[in-house]
Length: 491
Ligand SMILES: NC(=O)C1=CN([C@@H]2O[C@H](COP(=O)(O)OP(=O)(O)OC[C@H]3O[C@@H](n4cnc5c(N)ncnc54)[C@H](OP(=O)(O)O)[C@@H]3O)[C@@H](O)[C@H]2O)C=CC1
Ligand SMILES: CC[C@](O)(C(C)=O)C(=O)O
Ligand SMILES: [Mg+2]
Ligand SMILES: [Mg+2]
Image 1 (cartoon, rainbow, N blue to C red):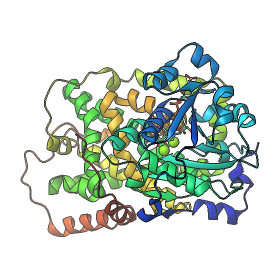
Image 2 (image 1 turned 90 degrees about the horizontal axis):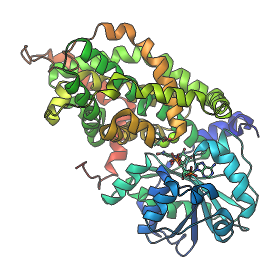
Image 3 (image 1 turned 120 degrees about the vertical axis):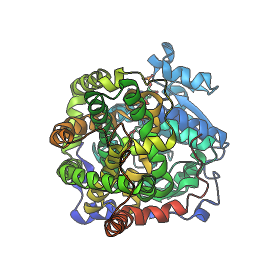
Image 4 (image 1 turned 90 degrees about the vertical axis):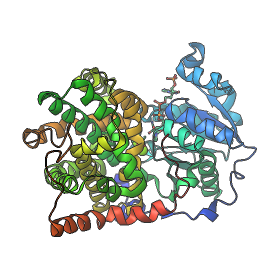
């Protein structure tokens, strides 16, 4: 199998990378009807599997789970997830032959072996679905010609797919039909129905391609979404402790701070997040983020280049073949960091205090979102996709850190995202060593400007506001957020 993207002509690469259409609400007026009454069988019942299945069932679809035999025999977590939620569970042989739609929600590493086992059992003309295009794009998996191949990729962790649905909303979702596998022309209707069933249409659906989804998804998760939140957590915590801030307070400020400041981002983009700061603090956060952008730009570009060339997927697949040695070592090391090991103190931190005492965190978020967006769009990914993979998803990942720190984030995201997150973090921390030497507690741990008056130079403030508001991620974001009128606050 060869990397599918690398086999395409330059023209096809650019066409597929640039495929991105924001779908109108009325395109979903048929609801779930294209899948109503069809037998849907989900392979795997983990982060995405369980939560997508729960939403689909609540939307009136017929969902069951197939698991590998050992998981059923040993009543593993995936078996418990499915049976405790009263789903029918069976082996591949029992359920796949009767399925109209088989949804592969196993980890990317397992896709080749899972598809090789499942494909011969699928009935003629059935549909195979993925939530990430890695197997098709990076591994070049070829699917039987009679089968339709679609992708419905929620742009967020599985836990949030469920939580947003329960709040009556949903998460932005990319849908695609593999151009090599749409023999009956039913792929798009089925993908649309699936997106309605998971609630995705309420938050916005992009009609995209497997290629655009993979390249943008990998970039977002490695950099701003997971990598930078990990690096920022560790560096901010260590700095506060070094400067004498109470470790329990520092731990709480970081654990819940990302969620709080990115809630501002979710509602009104970088502009609103920065507007939550006092004027002097906003100017300081802007200056810090400009510095961060200059230092980290080459690293963001390297990640994008390695993703585009296939170098990233090749090296990760080497780790798969080596029993995940790197992944498991890096995961264990994350568990040993002082941030992870220091419990949050039982102190109250008001919503505003998270901003006022977390100016550096706000700067990290602005720098990371803008750099990720810029690297993606510079490489041919359309602004809407880049927005979802940078700004929109950051708060959803931050929610996972609020639950149980980096452990929870790395548990909830896919193994692919986790691997890329560690790669970025290991390269980024040394890159920021000199920058961090100059950081004091006025920008992390204490209120910026507490002992000063609030005056600022008007011309400077106007220039800063202009730079923030005119960034393309803000322009695209304003438009996309306008379509998310049903957005619900975190309670
Ligand atoms: N995590 C996320 O939030 C997101 C994930 N995705 C994509 O969704 C897909 C699923 O990822 P995710 O939910 O993280 O996966 P998980 O790691 O949470 O899923 C594990 C499930 O797959 C099963 N499984 C593992 N290995 C095998 C195997 N060899 N054969 C059969 N079943 C197996 C497990 O069962 P068992 O008990 O047998 O081990 C378990 O049910 C991936 O393509 C990922 O990229 C997309 C968006 C976000
Ligand atoms: C951010 C990571 C992700 O792409 C996701 C939750 O969207 C993943 O692969 O887990
Ligand atoms: Mg993703
Ligand atoms: Mg991913």
